[in-house]
Image (cartoon, rainbow, N blue to C red; front, side):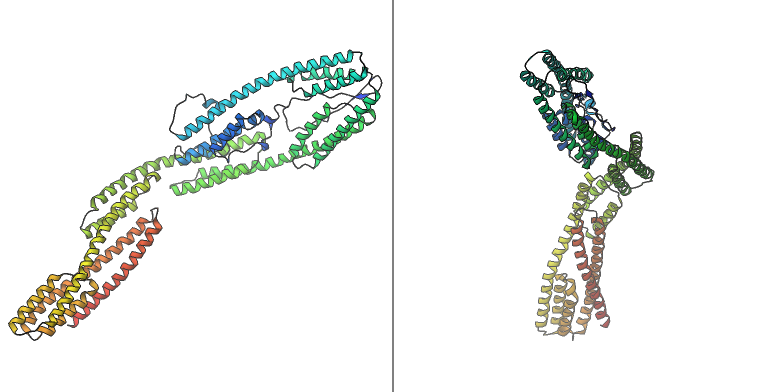
Amino acid sequence: MSEDLNPVAPIEEQPVEVKEEAVETPAAPVADTENETANETENEKTDFSNQGLKEIVDTFKGLIDGENMQQLYKHAEALKAAFYKNLRKEKIASGLEQPAAEATAEAPAEAPAEEAAEEPETVSVNPFAEIERGFKDLYSQYKAKRAVYTQELEKAKEENYQAKLAVIEDLKALVEASEDLNQTFPRFREIQNRWRAIGPVPQAKVKDLYDTYQHYVEKFYDYVKINKEFRDLDFKKNLEAKENLCEKAEGLAEEEDVVGAFRTLQKLHEQWKELGPVSKEFRESIWERFRAATAVINKKHQAFFESQKGNQKENLEAKTALCEKVEAIAQTEVKDSTDWNALTKEIENIQKEWKKIGFASKKDNQKVYDRFRAACDDFFAKKREFYSEFKNQMQDNLTQKLDLCEQAEALKDSEDWKKTSEAFIELQKKWKEIGPVSRKKSEQVWKRFRAACDDFFDNRDKHFGSMNSEQTVNLQKKRDLIDEIRAFEVEGKEEAREALHEFQERWNAIGFVPFKEKTRIQEAFRKAVNEKFGEFRETGSRFAGKAERTVRSERDRLVQKFMKKEQEIATWENNMGFFAASKNADALLAELNKKIDIAKQELAQLEEEIKEFDRQHEQE
């Protein structure tokens, strides 16, 4: 039978007049309980929202494949609601669908499975489409199985009805028969057991059927001459059974689950109805005991739902406050994705808070939910509109970054190191000024641009690295030349002039040396020349002019290297901001910081060498 929130009315037993000794009225009809599971209160519904799509499908399939139709009927709609809710979340998370439906806090805005199942079947590469089709197939199986089960149940009820009519006919024949008591009473017990073993009958036929059965039971107790020994034994067994039911009913008063205790009490009443009478002396007392236990549970049940009214009022106030919060957020002016993400997180937290609040009253619960859902829909509609425009902007940003990639790739093989370095720095600045692109393309286009930049700067580093190696060889050549000058034996003025000219030509032909050795090796060369050829003034004067030009050339090269090092530091510092947006930013920044620290030390050394170079030549 369907259950509501009203307490069970106490079951009255009325004594019936009999010929020899009064017996209590036989059991009243038991109400049909097939729909009991379907009418559970909202507090008892199972929550499947925390399960994944596969778990929900597997759970549903397991119920369909099982034999418990009541459990299947109990959970089918909850499984469907959880499935479409999680399906929408998965579609949004994978980027297949805009986050519109996530605005709802309690139920997904999906078409019912039975309607969607009527769509023509198509094969899709979309995994969610196949999952959804599979769920729709399961739901169709459930509907078909439920229809068959309902038909079979109604057929079984009709068969039960016919079986109970046959039992009544047997009971009628027993009442009218004139048989020995030793045979009649066992047959009566067998008829009672058959009656109790037969399942429910159609609801419309319950009352007449049970009234007829009760009539013949009463006739049996009234007209059949029962041996006092058998009757007393029957009364005793019935009394013990009813005392057991009283104890169970009294124990329900200690149950914390008031609704569960109320349901159990209903089942105890049904069992009470099926029991036969007790002796007259205990009839009133045992019934009063059972009725008193019933009254306690009824009062607790009524008090529970009275208290629920107060809770429902508080729940309504709490949900109304959340509606106002979402409505205020929906009216907020949002101009960037960071704010949208923050507000979305806030909405999601409010939705979680909403789920923790219990139900409001029936008349208010749907209204406040509709208000909350409308506010959430408003917010996510605005967010969807923003990201629709934002998507176009990201596409434009992608076009600009692809253009920079092409420019960088065109420059990456250039050997005009200074000019191209400046060009790459400018491209990197432009890159930083361009807004974001879609997450799917961001890493790809960034790697392409960075690869072009890395190719150029790696080539430049290799070039200057090879120069440093060559300069080390030149340094040794100049040291060997200085040793040769010191060992030279001067024999005459003309010979000294020719030798000096040759040494100078050879010195200039050797080329550059490492910068930090430049001043020392130049001074060593001048000192060796002055010591060996200083007495020849004319020759020394000519050499002095060439030496002066060499000094100027060396200082210019020193300054150029200083400026180059400054440019490298500027490039790396610019790259620090540029690479901060990359996936491996920490490693890149650590590497750049190390390079910059070393370069700054070299820059300080170069600056000191230029100053020392200038001080030495000012004194000469």
